[in-house]
Image 1 (tube, rainbow, N blue to C red):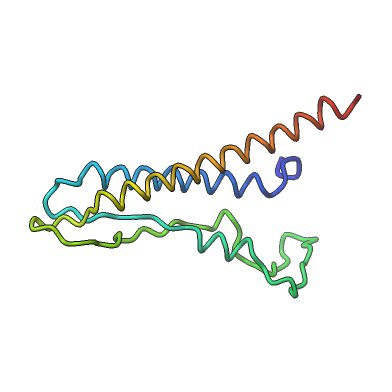
Image 2 (image 1 turned 180 degrees about the horizontal axis):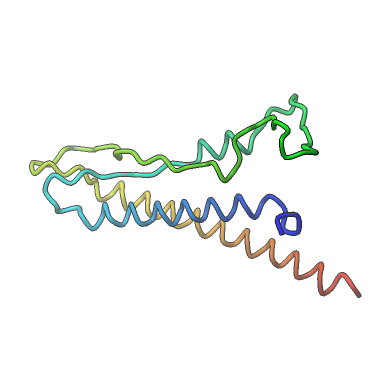
Length: 138
């Protein structure tokens, strides 16, 4: 099945999953903005995606002809794991809460836009497949 859809579908799916997970974390931070001693969290995965996606142009790409062959880049999209960390703290509150509501709302908006871009890209890829199946025969 992956040969039919190509590699980009795996990356889009994984990135959308991570954006969805990050949305839940940011929403929890916003919901706990008034909770004493609550520490805000965030999720990152973009740097890991960059390492997998961007290879030096001078590198030689290798084709594996056997499952036991070693790959040039052992890390693939299925091995990418999100990294949970304590979110940057603005001015600390007196009750120990580290949620900066403005920062969290901005991050949530950015994450929502990124998710929408990924979804639109996925829709476009399916439209290309639909075109190839239907209109390609004319």
